[in-house]
Length: 188
Ligand SMILES: Cc1cc2nc3c(=O)[nH]c(=O)nc-3n(C[C@H](O)[C@H](O)[C@H](O)COP(=O)(O)OP(=O)(O)OC[C@H]3O[C@@H](n4cnc5c(N)ncnc54)[C@H](O)[C@@H]3O)c2cc1C
Image (cartoon, rainbow, N blue to C red; front, side, top):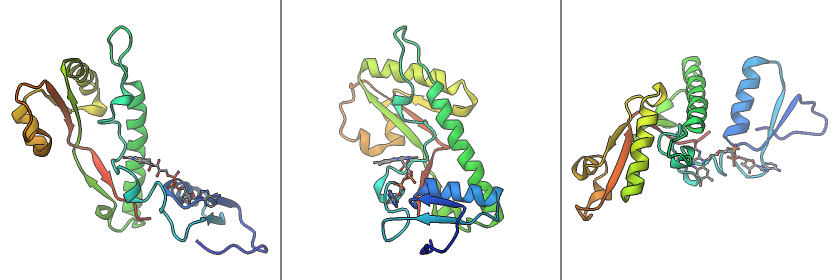
Protein backbone atom coordinates (compact mmCIF):
# COMPACT_ATOMS: atom_id res chain seq x y z
CA UNK A 1 0.00 0.00 0.00
CA UNK A 2 1.33 3.41 -0.96
CA UNK A 3 0.34 6.71 0.53
CA UNK A 4 -1.85 8.31 -2.15
CA UNK A 5 -1.28 11.98 -2.83
CA UNK A 6 -3.87 14.37 -4.20
CA UNK A 7 -1.91 14.73 -7.47
CA UNK A 8 -1.68 11.01 -8.22
CA UNK A 9 -4.22 9.64 -10.65
CA UNK A 10 -5.45 6.15 -10.04
CA UNK A 11 -7.84 3.94 -11.99
CA UNK A 12 -9.25 1.91 -9.12
CA UNK A 13 -9.47 2.61 -5.39
CA UNK A 14 -9.98 -0.46 -3.24
CA UNK A 15 -11.25 0.37 0.24
CA UNK A 16 -9.83 -1.96 2.90
CA UNK A 17 -6.91 -4.36 2.72
CA UNK A 18 -8.70 -7.60 3.62
CA UNK A 19 -8.90 -10.75 1.52
CA UNK A 20 -11.68 -9.34 -0.70
CA UNK A 21 -9.88 -6.20 -1.86
CA UNK A 22 -6.60 -8.01 -2.33
CA UNK A 23 -8.27 -10.77 -4.35
CA UNK A 24 -10.12 -8.26 -6.50
CA UNK A 25 -6.90 -6.29 -6.93
CA UNK A 26 -5.08 -9.45 -8.03
CA UNK A 27 -7.86 -10.23 -10.55
CA UNK A 28 -7.78 -6.71 -11.96
CA UNK A 29 -3.99 -6.77 -12.33
CA UNK A 30 -4.20 -10.14 -14.10
CA UNK A 31 -6.82 -8.92 -16.54
CA UNK A 32 -5.56 -5.35 -17.05
CA UNK A 33 -1.95 -5.09 -15.84
CA UNK A 34 -1.73 -1.40 -16.80
CA UNK A 35 -4.36 -0.37 -14.23
CA UNK A 36 -3.16 1.82 -11.38
CA UNK A 37 -4.67 0.48 -8.17
CA UNK A 38 -4.65 2.01 -4.74
CA UNK A 39 -5.61 0.03 -1.64
CA UNK A 40 -6.75 2.32 1.18
CA UNK A 41 -6.66 0.84 4.66
CA UNK A 42 -7.64 2.62 7.88
CA UNK A 43 -5.67 0.28 10.16
CA UNK A 44 -1.85 0.23 10.45
CA UNK A 45 -1.57 -2.98 8.41
CA UNK A 46 -3.38 -5.37 6.09
CA UNK A 47 -5.66 -8.31 7.03
CA UNK A 48 -6.20 -7.14 10.61
CA UNK A 49 -10.00 -7.39 10.63
CA UNK A 50 -12.09 -10.42 9.60
CA UNK A 51 -9.35 -11.74 7.32
CA UNK A 52 -6.85 -11.96 10.18
CA UNK A 53 -6.24 -15.60 11.08
CA UNK A 54 -7.04 -14.99 14.76
CA UNK A 55 -10.38 -13.31 13.99
CA UNK A 56 -12.12 -16.06 12.03
CA UNK A 57 -12.66 -19.78 12.37
CA UNK A 58 -10.25 -20.35 9.53
CA UNK A 59 -11.96 -23.14 7.66
CA UNK A 60 -11.69 -22.90 3.92
CA UNK A 61 -15.41 -22.39 3.51
CA UNK A 62 -16.48 -25.29 1.26
CA UNK A 63 -19.75 -25.95 3.15
CA UNK A 64 -18.51 -29.37 4.24
CA UNK A 65 -19.62 -29.03 7.84
CA UNK A 66 -21.82 -25.96 8.22
CA UNK A 67 -25.27 -27.43 8.92
CA UNK A 68 -27.07 -24.14 8.24
CA UNK A 69 -26.36 -24.50 4.51
CA UNK A 70 -28.42 -27.70 4.28
CA UNK A 71 -31.86 -27.01 5.74
CA UNK A 72 -34.52 -29.69 6.05
CA UNK A 73 -37.76 -28.91 4.24
CA UNK A 74 -41.28 -29.47 5.60
CA UNK A 75 -41.37 -32.79 3.75
CA UNK A 76 -38.21 -33.94 5.56
CA UNK A 77 -35.96 -33.71 2.51
CA UNK A 78 -32.55 -32.02 2.72
CA UNK A 79 -31.82 -29.16 0.36
CA UNK A 80 -28.09 -29.02 -0.48
CA UNK A 81 -28.36 -26.28 -3.16
CA UNK A 82 -26.80 -23.53 -1.01
CA UNK A 83 -23.98 -25.83 0.10
CA UNK A 84 -23.20 -26.66 -3.52
CA UNK A 85 -23.11 -22.99 -4.44
CA UNK A 86 -20.61 -22.27 -1.64
CA UNK A 87 -18.57 -25.37 -2.48
CA UNK A 88 -18.19 -24.36 -6.12
CA UNK A 89 -17.24 -20.80 -5.13
CA UNK A 90 -14.52 -22.14 -2.82
CA UNK A 91 -13.31 -24.49 -5.53
CA UNK A 92 -12.83 -21.48 -7.77
CA UNK A 93 -10.77 -19.81 -5.04
CA UNK A 94 -8.62 -22.96 -4.88
CA UNK A 95 -8.14 -22.85 -8.65
CA UNK A 96 -7.17 -19.19 -8.49
CA UNK A 97 -4.67 -19.77 -5.65
CA UNK A 98 -3.22 -22.78 -7.53
CA UNK A 99 -2.69 -20.53 -10.53
CA UNK A 100 -0.96 -17.93 -8.33
CA UNK A 101 1.26 -20.66 -6.84
CA UNK A 102 2.26 -21.81 -10.35
CA UNK A 103 3.03 -18.22 -11.29
CA UNK A 104 5.19 -17.84 -8.18
CA UNK A 105 2.96 -15.11 -6.74
CA UNK A 106 2.30 -17.30 -3.66
CA UNK A 107 5.76 -18.72 -2.87
CA UNK A 108 4.84 -20.87 0.16
CA UNK A 109 1.21 -22.03 -0.07
CA UNK A 110 1.61 -24.21 3.03
CA UNK A 111 2.01 -21.03 5.07
CA UNK A 112 -1.47 -19.95 4.11
CA UNK A 113 -3.52 -23.09 3.47
CA UNK A 114 -3.37 -26.59 4.96
CA UNK A 115 -5.51 -29.72 4.56
CA UNK A 116 -7.70 -30.25 7.62
CA UNK A 117 -10.66 -32.66 7.96
CA UNK A 118 -13.99 -30.87 8.38
CA UNK A 119 -16.46 -32.50 10.75
CA UNK A 120 -20.04 -32.04 11.91
CA UNK A 121 -21.07 -33.55 15.23
CA UNK A 122 -24.64 -33.88 16.54
CA UNK A 123 -26.35 -35.25 19.66
CA UNK A 124 -29.83 -36.79 19.90
CA UNK A 125 -32.01 -39.02 17.75
CA UNK A 126 -33.59 -36.28 15.62
CA UNK A 127 -30.24 -34.68 14.86
CA UNK A 128 -28.78 -38.08 14.08
CA UNK A 129 -31.59 -38.66 11.55
CA UNK A 130 -30.97 -35.22 10.04
CA UNK A 131 -27.23 -35.77 9.69
CA UNK A 132 -27.74 -39.20 8.16
CA UNK A 133 -30.07 -37.82 5.50
CA UNK A 134 -27.77 -34.87 4.90
CA UNK A 135 -24.86 -37.22 4.41
CA UNK A 136 -26.85 -39.33 1.94
CA UNK A 137 -27.78 -36.23 -0.08
CA UNK A 138 -24.29 -34.72 -0.01
CA UNK A 139 -22.11 -37.77 -0.54
CA UNK A 140 -24.05 -38.74 -3.66
CA UNK A 141 -22.85 -35.50 -5.28
CA UNK A 142 -19.30 -35.35 -6.67
CA UNK A 143 -18.54 -32.17 -4.67
CA UNK A 144 -18.86 -34.18 -1.47
CA UNK A 145 -17.75 -37.56 -2.73
CA UNK A 146 -16.03 -39.51 0.06
CA UNK A 147 -17.69 -37.71 2.97
CA UNK A 148 -17.91 -40.26 5.83
CA UNK A 149 -20.76 -40.78 8.31
CA UNK A 150 -20.76 -42.62 11.62
CA UNK A 151 -22.96 -43.16 14.67
CA UNK A 152 -20.35 -45.41 16.26
CA UNK A 153 -18.75 -43.97 19.41
CA UNK A 154 -15.46 -45.78 18.80
CA UNK A 155 -15.19 -44.54 15.20
CA UNK A 156 -16.05 -40.94 16.15
CA UNK A 157 -13.52 -41.17 19.00
CA UNK A 158 -10.89 -42.07 16.40
CA UNK A 159 -11.79 -38.90 14.49
CA UNK A 160 -12.18 -36.60 17.55
CA UNK A 161 -10.86 -38.15 20.78
CA UNK A 162 -11.49 -35.10 22.97
CA UNK A 163 -15.13 -34.74 21.95
CA UNK A 164 -15.85 -38.36 22.88
CA UNK A 165 -13.77 -38.59 26.05
CA UNK A 166 -15.96 -39.33 29.11
CA UNK A 167 -19.19 -39.32 27.07
CA UNK A 168 -22.15 -41.54 28.05
CA UNK A 169 -21.70 -44.58 25.78
CA UNK A 170 -25.49 -44.80 25.29
CA UNK A 171 -25.87 -41.23 24.08
CA UNK A 172 -27.13 -40.99 20.47
CA UNK A 173 -24.48 -39.18 18.49
CA UNK A 174 -23.48 -38.90 14.85
CA UNK A 175 -20.69 -37.27 12.89
CA UNK A 176 -19.58 -36.67 9.35
CA UNK A 177 -15.99 -36.21 8.26
CA UNK A 178 -14.71 -34.71 5.02
CA UNK A 179 -11.02 -35.34 4.63
CA UNK A 180 -10.31 -32.85 1.88
CA UNK A 181 -11.29 -29.79 3.92
CA UNK A 182 -8.82 -26.94 4.37
CA UNK A 183 -7.67 -24.48 6.97
CA UNK A 184 -6.69 -21.00 5.82
CA UNK A 185 -4.11 -18.92 7.64
CA UNK A 186 -4.32 -15.58 5.96
CA UNK A 187 -1.28 -13.36 6.31
CA UNK A 188 -1.46 -11.27 3.18
C1 LIG B 1 -15.94 -14.85 13.63
C2 LIG B 1 -15.76 -15.11 12.15
C3 LIG B 1 -15.52 -16.40 11.72
C4 LIG B 1 -15.35 -16.66 10.35
N1 LIG B 1 -15.04 -17.91 9.95
C5 LIG B 1 -14.80 -18.16 8.65
C6 LIG B 1 -14.39 -19.43 8.21
O1 LIG B 1 -14.23 -20.35 9.01
N2 LIG B 1 -14.18 -19.64 6.89
C7 LIG B 1 -14.32 -18.64 5.98
O2 LIG B 1 -14.10 -18.88 4.79
N3 LIG B 1 -14.70 -17.40 6.36
C8 LIG B 1 -14.93 -17.15 7.66
N4 LIG B 1 -15.29 -15.91 8.06
C9 LIG B 1 -15.53 -14.90 7.02
C10 LIG B 1 -14.25 -14.29 6.48
O3 LIG B 1 -13.35 -14.05 7.54
C11 LIG B 1 -14.65 -12.99 5.78
O4 LIG B 1 -15.66 -13.26 4.83
C12 LIG B 1 -13.51 -12.33 5.07
O5 LIG B 1 -12.36 -12.23 5.87
C13 LIG B 1 -13.99 -10.96 4.63
O6 LIG B 1 -12.92 -10.30 3.99
P1 LIG B 1 -13.03 -8.78 3.70
O7 LIG B 1 -11.81 -8.38 2.94
O8 LIG B 1 -14.37 -8.47 3.09
O9 LIG B 1 -13.11 -8.07 5.12
P2 LIG B 1 -11.94 -7.66 6.16
O10 LIG B 1 -10.84 -8.65 6.25
O11 LIG B 1 -12.65 -7.30 7.41
O12 LIG B 1 -11.34 -6.37 5.48
C14 LIG B 1 -12.01 -5.14 5.43
C15 LIG B 1 -10.95 -4.07 5.66
O13 LIG B 1 -11.52 -2.81 5.32
C16 LIG B 1 -11.01 -1.87 6.23
N5 LIG B 1 -11.94 -0.72 6.17
C17 LIG B 1 -13.24 -0.72 6.45
N6 LIG B 1 -13.75 0.51 6.23
C18 LIG B 1 -12.73 1.28 5.77
C19 LIG B 1 -12.64 2.61 5.34
N7 LIG B 1 -13.71 3.42 5.35
N8 LIG B 1 -11.44 3.06 4.93
C20 LIG B 1 -10.34 2.26 4.91
N9 LIG B 1 -10.37 0.97 5.30
C21 LIG B 1 -11.56 0.49 5.72
C22 LIG B 1 -11.00 -2.61 7.55
O14 LIG B 1 -10.11 -2.02 8.47
C23 LIG B 1 -10.50 -3.98 7.10
O15 LIG B 1 -9.08 -4.09 7.14
C24 LIG B 1 -15.46 -15.60 9.41
C25 LIG B 1 -15.69 -14.29 9.86
C26 LIG B 1 -15.83 -14.03 11.21
C27 LIG B 1 -16.04 -12.60 11.68
